[in-house]
View 1 (tube, one colour):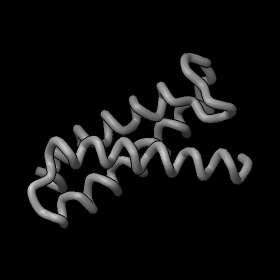
View 2: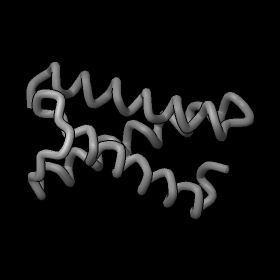
View 3: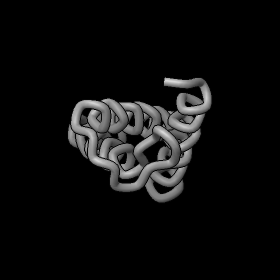
Length: 85
């Protein structure tokens, strides 16, 4: 994994977390939690993409479709566990 790939993963993860926070956050603490969920979920999605390589929507070596899927799964799990509202 190259540094530009890691930076792109972090940027897209923060973007996904910001979108979640825009629609769901109530206080500043929730914004931080959703940003964390976005980064963790996007990174988890990239891990899944490396295990099961299927090029759906890629930017370089970053598979955006798997990243968004990872964010959705981690956001659902965190909401069910009470980490986010």
